[in-house]
Length: 455
Ligand code: ARG
Image 1 (tube, rainbow, N blue to C red):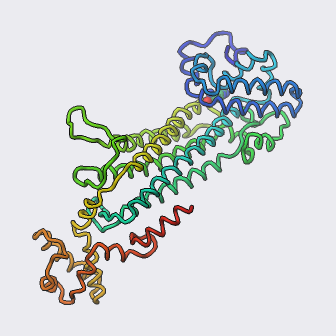
Image 2: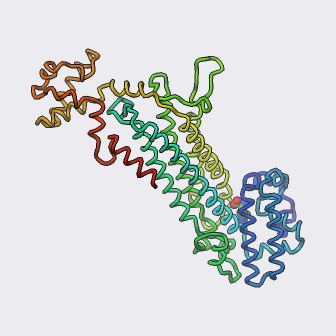
Image 3: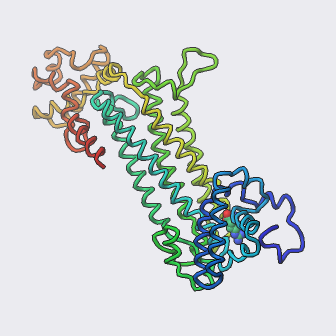
C-alpha cells in the first residue's frame, strides 16, 4: 500500500509505479534511513508524541531491521515499496504494528531523504578520503623508488627538459592533495542536519534540532527549511570534486599509457593489470589505465546531469530531485574503483631507467642549458636563445647531440663558448641547477618527498 493512499480512489498505473518508484536505486540508503529514524523516534519522544517505552520499542525494532536487512539488498528489492523510506516504514509496521505508524509524525520524506543522502555522502566521502590517501601512499613509494630515475619532461608532447620520475610522481601527489582538501571542504559544508525541516515549512513540533543534529553526528542543523529540502549542493559539489579528481586520474593514466607505449618504453606494467589481445600474441595492453581514462567521461556526465536537473527548479522540493541518486552513486562507485585501480597499477610499476635516461639525452633537452651558459658568459638571453636555435638546426641535420660538437665548431656560433661548456650540458648539471623551490634537482625532490611523507 502506498504511503499516501487516503486521498486517492484509484490505484496507480503499473507504468506510473515503475516510473515513480525509486527503491531500485535508493535501497542503498537503508542504513542511513534507519539511523535517521532512530534519532527521529527520540526527537518525537522528547516532544511528547510517543512515550519512552514506545520510543524504545521503535528503536529496538529499527535496530533489528538494520541487522536483518542492512546488508541484504536482495531482500529489500523483493518489496514493491515506492522508496526506501516507505520500505523501512512498512517493515517497521510489520514488526510492531500500529505503533510503527506513529514514527512519521512531524517528519516528511522531504527532510528525511535530504538527511539520508547527507549521511550517506558523509560516510562515503570519508571512504573516498581513505582511498585518495592510499593512492597518495603508492605515489610516494614510487617516488622514493624512482626518485632519481632521469626521464624527459615534455611540453606539447615534445621532449623539453630532463626531470626525474620522482618529480613526476610528486606532481600527481600535489593534484591528489588538492582533491583531498576539496572533498574535505565539501564534506564540511554538507555537515548540517536537515531533519526537522518538515516538508518545506519546518516541523510543527517544538524539536531541539541542535540536539537532533548532534545525535546524528552532524556539526549543526540547517537553518532554513525551504532551502533544506531543496538543497542538493552537496551532490553537485561531490560530483564536481569527483570530476576534478577523475581528470587528474585520467591525466596520470594518459601519461602512463604513453610511457608504456612501444615508442617510449619507459615503464613496465604488471601482468595483473594488463590484458592480452585475442589475435596478436605479442600484445600487453594497458586496459586498467585506459578504463580509468574512459570512465572519467561517465563521471563528468553525472556532474552535468545533476547540474541540469537542479537548474531553475522552483523552491522547494520537486520530484525531479529524486534523479540525484543514480548519478551520485555511480560517481562514488566509479571514483572509488578508479582510485583503487590506480594504486594497484602504481604498486606493480617498474621504470626502465636505461630507456628513460636515453630518451632524456636525446631530443636536445639540454638546449636551455647552452642558452643559460651563454647568458652566464654575458650574452643577453634573447640572443642566446637565437644562437642555440642555430646550433640545434645543425645538430638535427647531423643527428648529433650538442655535447658531441667539438669546441671549435661551437665557437663558430659564439666565440664566448669555452671548454667548461661540456660540464653544463650534462644531465646531472641540468638537474642540479633546478634547485629553487619546486624544481627537479635531486635535493629539491628529496626534500619535497620528505615533506609529503610527513603530512
Ligand atoms: N524518493 C524521493 C526522493 O528520492 C523521496 C522524497 C519523496 N517526497 C515526496 N514528497 N514525494 O526524492
